Image 1 (cartoon, one colour):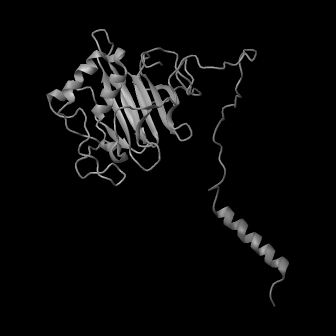
Image 2 (tube, one colour):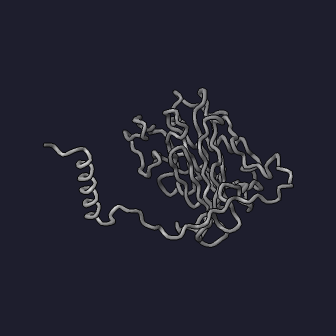
Length: 283
């Protein structure tokens, strides 16, 4: 005779109980310690009338077509970076031309860029060479130029160009830098091709300690007046505005360590908001 249904149920429960007992407390829930009490945001001065315009203009979403610089075959790698910088100098004579111009040495230094070769890269840190690619499978143009090579190169303000698709259209864009001389400012620019024209989609000047490309973003690190802290600005491509927007503006520890427990930023700064210090960059 086969055991009845109740007897089978009892036997199953007994086996399950013995199996659990044999496993001890493995896999059981354990206490994680004290959990900080959640504090909701407290809105201050609700009686203040909300501002309707920014306190200062940091030229977000400003784009500009570069006049006088052609884009052969809509290939931005065939555009001479020196020609782009010269076009900006010509368009802003008060900044670059004359003995009283704040960046007069940049214009003068362009004479030392005339015979320089190229060290264009794809933004990964490895220089491209003839036959190398920029990550899109297409060879880089051997005619691209930068400040690389020779003693004269150190006097050329144009820095090595980088090519990477920042706009997501499948074609490389140009990230270009040049020194604003005299002084310690570096101009950072991003260009793309729009309707057969060279279009500048980002412009920023600052005292720069590092520049990185990550995904659709350009990350600029700059020194601060506060020891062991640095500014970190992230510009990200916005497909609706068709421009690079300043999406993050933070003060972070330069040694990579986190701030104290429960803090989200350095004293006096809330991540994601413009910093109150002033400089030629507009920060």
